[in-house]
Image 1 (cartoon, rainbow, N blue to C red):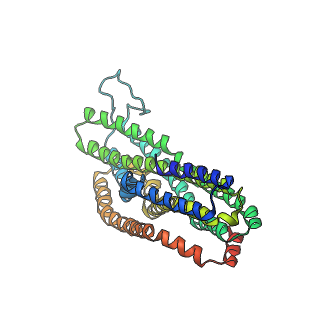
Image 2 (cartoon, rainbow, N blue to C red):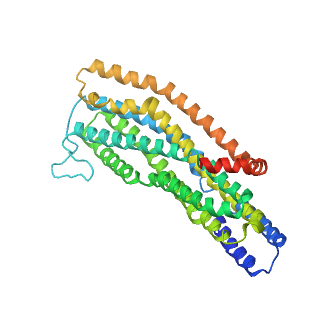
Image 3 (cartoon, rainbow, N blue to C red):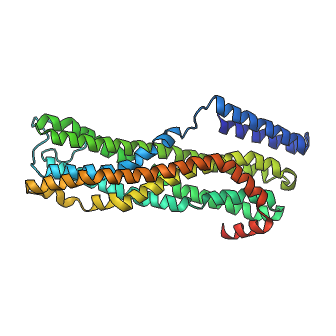
Length: 373
C-alpha cells in the first residue's frame, strides 16, 4: 500500500472515530503522530527513491537538449543543402511518416518545420506554467495558516475559495503538460523512419551521423515530457484527489477542536505537493531561459540554411555552429546545476520552513495573505 493510500485510509478512519466520540483529541493526535512515523518508515524502507527520482536525476540533461537540438538541426539543414535525392531504394517502397520520400531536402524541411512548431509551442506552454505555478507554494501555506489561525466563520468563507483557486491553478498549468506528447511521438517516429532509410540511399555518412545526433536529442525531449507528464499527473492527483478531499472531510467538523490533527495530516502532503511543483517550476524556468537566449532564435531563422549553394559558406556556417555550441552548453549546464542545487537545498529545509511559517505568522498576516490569494 503506497503512502497516498495510507493517508486516505487513515483520514477516513480518523473522521469516523472523531464523529463517533469514542476518542478524545489527545488520543486522536497521538494516533496520527504514530501513523506519520509509520508512513515515513514505509517511505524509507519500501520506496527507497521518490517516484520523481528519474526526473530529478536527469532533468539537467533533458533541458540542455533544447539548445543542442537547435544547433544540431541547423547543421543538418546545412548538410541537406548539398544535394537532393530520393529516400526510397525501390520505387514501390512506401513511408508512414515522411510526406515526400522522393526528396531528402523536403523531408528535412518537414522535420525542421515540425520541430520548430513543437519547440515554440513548448516554450509558450512552459512559460505559462512557470508563471502560473510561481505563487502556488504561498497558496498552499495560506491554506494551512487558515486552518491554524482562522475562526470557523473565516474558514467557512475562505477555504472553499482557496481550494477552488488551487484547482484552477493546477488544472490550468499542469494539464498543459499532457498536450505535447502526441506531437513529440510523431517527430520521434519521423526521425526513426528517416534514420532507417538514409544509410541505404547515400554513401555520405555526414547525413547519417547528423540525423542520429538530432534523433538522440529528440529522444531526450521525449523522455523529458514523458516524465513531466507523470509528475503533473501526480501533482494533480495529490492536490485535487487527496489534499482537497481530506480538507473537505474535516471541514464538516468543529475545526477549533481538531486544528492540530488537520495540520499534522496535511503538512506532509503539502510538502510533497510543493516539492513536485518546485521541480516542475525550475525545469520550466530553465527551458524558457534556454529558449529565449538561444534555441528560439536558431530555429526561427533557419529556413534559409537548406538553400545554401556555396560549399565554402556551408563549411563556415557548420564551423560556427560547432564552435558556439560548447560555451553555450557549458553556460546552460551551470545554470541548470545551480538551480538543481538550490532545489535540493529547499527539499532539506522545507519542513522546517513550514514549521517556522505556521509558528511565526499572526492573524494579521493571515488576513493579509487572504486578501492577495
